[in-house]
Image: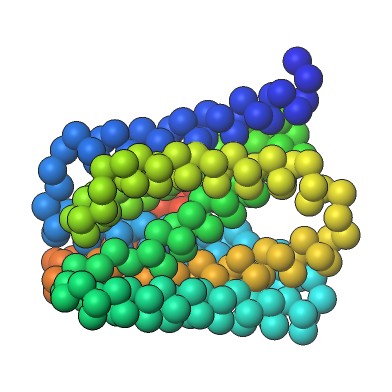
Length: 247
């Protein structure tokens, strides 16, 4: 089998497993407390992705100052996205007389899409080493992306997003993961290592700010769920164990 075709199939497997969370969220009505706990769990996984997989090699192998600046720029990018999104939502709410508390957190979903894209890039880069590594990484990451897709659609339902838009969001999850995997395999493998590490740091800054300003506040929108800290640490620890198994 052609290696590129094999990478596409590996990416499709990860994307397909991720998408399973979408119809599950549409079918079952999930209490807010469960959604909040799952968001805490997902936040822990993303934190571990940055702390365990992305930033250590970026700091070791990339230009140090540029890597740190890229990490900072990624965080600023998310803050600006969230700021302008909320500003637009506030203006629309004022014009329509809607309650701002019921507005859809577009910044949250954008952060999740970036997380899926980065996961795809990790799969693509792993596939450049050998196909078995790419396959194992795809299966491991799907354990975190499928619940994240489930939580995202469940949150969108609770925030009043139209069913048509939720379906589009689900397919965007698939597209983001596929695009990341193909980019990682076809493009980034041919780029200088320093540039790849700077881009990794940029994505890391965006993701960690997504956790702090997007996912955790959304999880605690109606008050912190019981054992929230345990769920966050559980997600972090699970990803750390998975990354250890992949070494």
